[in-house]
Image (cartoon, rainbow, N blue to C red; front, side, top):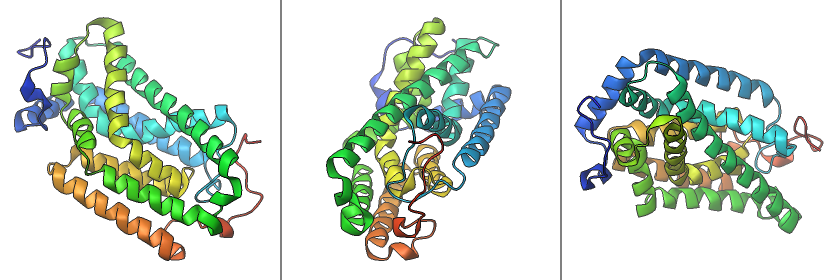
Length: 283
């Protein structure tokens, strides 16, 4: 495999990405430039489609999610828009290691990656509906709503500094280590490895996605904000500094939402949104 052994899982692969691993990812990106360009093209298309579908739909925290099928479709497109830029080095390196010239294996890898995030969206939809059913008016903005949003942002900030976050993020930041430690051959292997990589990404990013739901999941602005945080923590060379900066940002944002929500740029305060606003395809 061009000097890369796919067997076993040496202990040094659990460390954060080294200069050698970074160089391997950069080389793969250059070698598979067409594939990376395709992923970024799909990213741009996904952003356009998401903005079109969610235009005028942001009602702030607690925005109605619409019907399950509509939300799930939009969510998967959102995940492509948000995650493809940061996962593209892994996909490029995987494509290089397969020694296959076609796009079938990388696209199988990417498809299973998106399917896992789709499952996460389905679970989030269920939890959102359950919370509304159980607590209803108690979660209204002028009841406990702003405190709930602030609490979710604080939880996301705390999670940034936990050992579990560090382990999951290390897998995302070390594509070579992940691929060598999880290698499976063939199309079925591509599906399995894409799903495994997505599982590590979910472990890394679930709290940031919860923050997106708290701030307004149908807001393209907050979607871009969370996507930027994900890209920074996965791609920035200074992992610890990036994590601490993100944690501080989330804490400050949470305090602002609780104390001066009207002054938070991009935040739609629910009382100022149209009471009759419903999602496309919603009930």
